[in-house]
Image (tube, rainbow, N blue to C red; front, side):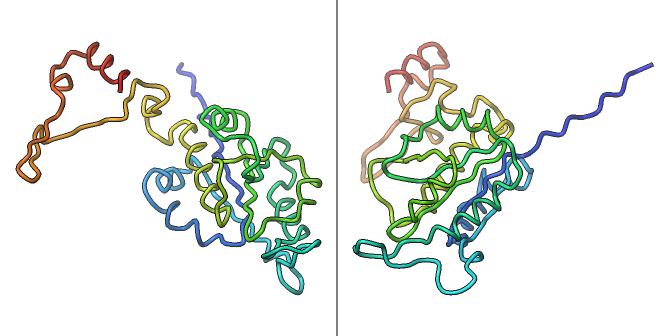
Length: 221
């Protein structure tokens, strides 16, 4: 008698985004690989708008001590993060900051393997009241040594890079650039293109079919 094995349902990686501008994510998340990953339930995106947790007044105010711009209040952000975390036991909260830990593929792989719920707190204007970081245990991360006008763009970068590490998102594990021999130069058909009376050809080595030499060429690029 054949044994019937129950299929194991793998829970999607869930990104909980704390932002006052959730609409800014729509275009990027609605296209290509991420859109397919969401549709196939490999990943899930949930938004929590601090504006929804303001009973009266506005979500931002002038900074204590003076200075330009406005600062997002702590209380609505705290309530949004608390809602996202809920009763989850294993969740990573990320606070986007130019002074945070440098984000890279190694960190992305760690998050994808260790957590199923990742909360990303997006700053705007002059930033978020620092008391949010005192209430929750979170890791500050940076996508580079520069300052952006808002947290939506770096949050989308984090979602993209971490999602690529989630099994099934890219279809094949070999699609991960860090797991294969790659180069900064790639070519496709036709073998020769012409522009302003000058011909541009695909490197002969790529047409040779000699896999070992092709890999050596890629490593050199």
